[in-house]
Amino acid sequence: MREANSIYPRCPRSAVNMITFSKYMLSLCILSCAGSLSHVAGFAPYSHPSTHLTSGAGVLTKGNTVHSSCTIKLNQSSTTGEEFDMRPVNKKNTLSTLSDNYKQLTTDHYLLMAFLQAGFLASGADIATQTMESNPIDFSHVAAMATVASTFSGAINAVWLRQLEQAFPGKANKEVATKTLIHAVILASIINSAYLVGVPLFSTCFSSHNGILHLLPLDIATVFKGWNFDEFLTLTKLEVAMFIPYNTLAFKFVPPQVRPLTHATISATFNVAVSAITLGYFDS
View 1 (spheres, rainbow, N blue to C red):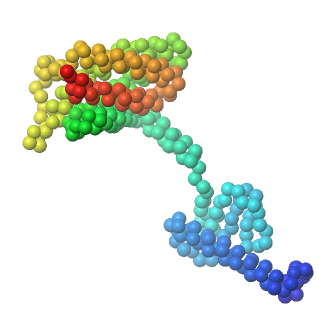
View 2 (view 1 turned 180 degrees about the vertical axis):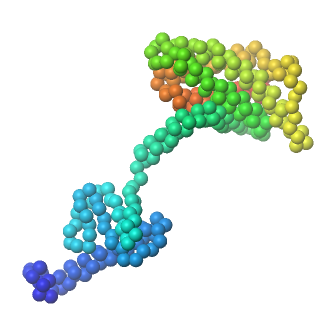
């Protein structure tokens, strides 16, 4: 105890004992916390670890040196030389990682992603439309909407957008206006007609009778039975009101690989009107 008193000359014996006891308790707490963390992380118990906490300021060990904590990294070393990093998860980094992964997917699988996105969003829009009308959901109509949307609003539209970007590259006002007008005049008319023709046709095809799907005779009168000028004009007016402003912004600010997703998202709102028309909600 003389050694302890030489270290703490002004401290009474009981105070020295408390300090010594506190040091050992601190060491035990550090060891037990390290063991608990390794158990939570799914690591097997280990024998005689050498544990230390490192921070930006310094090292906290079994000795008396104590440093202020900032971002804490737990280095757990054992006889096998393993090291575990347990840092707080940064939400911003997580969102950045998801964004990078999505961009990589749209780059590697451009058409497939456009196909799936459009089909998924159109299905949700059709289900929402039927639900708002308090009618039983007609899943054959949902499947028909998903089929036309994924094919035309998804894959074909994605190819068209890529071709437009290659033909008129850049974000100058002239190029943006040219791409917007070509898309509105040509592709929009094709897609609107595809909805009016394809949704009733595929709805009948997907309707099961006695559990059996059937196909219609593909004559011209049957194929174009669902198309009429008044409904086409209604969809064209809605297309002009929604997609000309959207495309003006998209061709200016949205990266090409992301445009199929943003277009499909806007189309989901447009598909509510398409569903209502093809379901006959506007029929007098």
